Length: 294
Image (cartoon, rainbow, N blue to C red; front, side, top):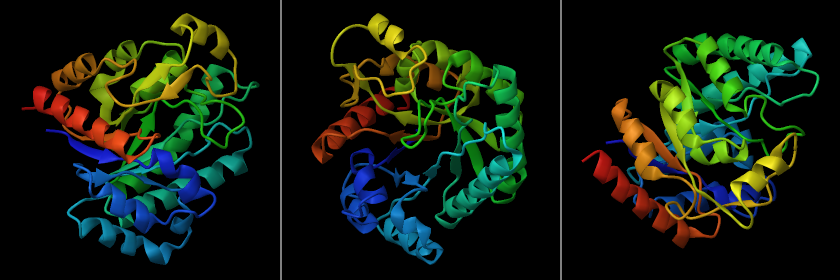
């Protein structure tokens, strides 16, 4: 059966910006959940101190949990080669971070969808940078996972490989045993596309998953698609919500993942309305996982 992790979606500002929450506080909350691990984020303020990395691993593992996945956001589509090299250096440090924490999966992205780039140019730049990181990842026993992402909080432009056709082109260009897909069904809606269509195209490459759900505050998916065309901002109509209550069809998602033999980590990227919501999302996923992986 796949394993379940959780990500502190509700506490990112507190953990990454204003220090109003400590990582030890998040660990104390998370280990009470019926989960197997905690997904980490490279931008937690306290992770700036490398000497602290072993301590955080110990704090998690003493509760019988692990840190399986690292979430980070390299920007590999910048036209300047020196900039891209700095991003490769950062990615290698995040691999070190993942390794020190005992993790197996470290996220990569394509980069920003800068308007001057053609699709082929952007895909080639991103692939070149990811491939430059893969030998280092392999040395450390880390798999680099590319997410069908929407937009990093601190980027000017959305994800270069946000659209399905571009994402699939990039994934197909990189063949390596330490490279795979982190599938996020909700992000596909932000691209104005069908999450099940994407999953069927990449399911044989999926090695981890973000479990999330979105719901429309108003209007329709067609309204969303019109608004999102060429937009650099977040979709105002879509909101994160409790898993199982939104747009995603988890029966169809898990049917496809089971079909291809998926047996890895599913990390919950919800709970924006508090820990009780996160507990309900955990319960929903545990029930569904038991159905499909009895």
